[in-house]
Length: 124
Image (cartoon, rainbow, N blue to C red; front, top):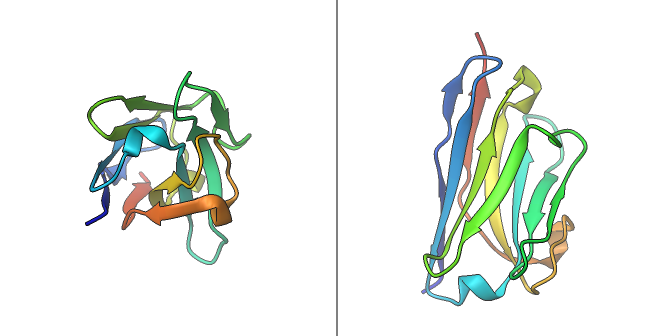
């Protein structure tokens, strides 16, 4: 059974930091690119970062570049999103997803599996 679970969300003050985790089981997680997406209330889902299956090629949306860092832990079927200098506009439900291929992409249609989402709220 394929399982993908995101965790680590919560309430944080502006300027604070959080690290989201994505843990998978039931398939060859390391063979595929991983993406992080977010969806704020009333807005479309946004692809914010992704990482290739090998050689750690990464991509960041302009909205998070320089503040967020994506990484993965080979052999442990895990990926992470380190978020710093958080802003109120970063408030959203964050999802990790597994691509159908090894090449990273922020096109949601290229992703096969999605985690359930974890809520990040940035507020004072």
